[in-house]
Image (cartoon, rainbow, N blue to C red; front, side, top):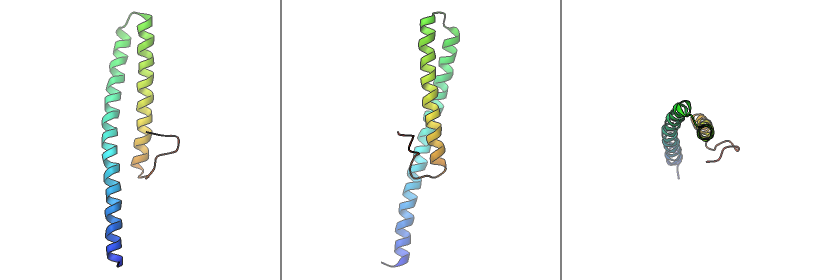
Length: 92
């Protein structure tokens, strides 16, 4: 196989990886937006809630949504840097 064909195959492979990474970034951005809206909605519910037990429940839900959003932001940052793999501390 000559060098030109090898370069074309390598380019096609790398472009496929880039497309996959861009698609993942697009979906992650969508998820992050949804989580942020959900977190804001829960915050409004928390302010309006009177019952202490319900407030605790909503507070835990806000904490969970916030943690998920932060994790998604870390993954998005790793994908933006163009890394082929995620940091070892982050699993999807």
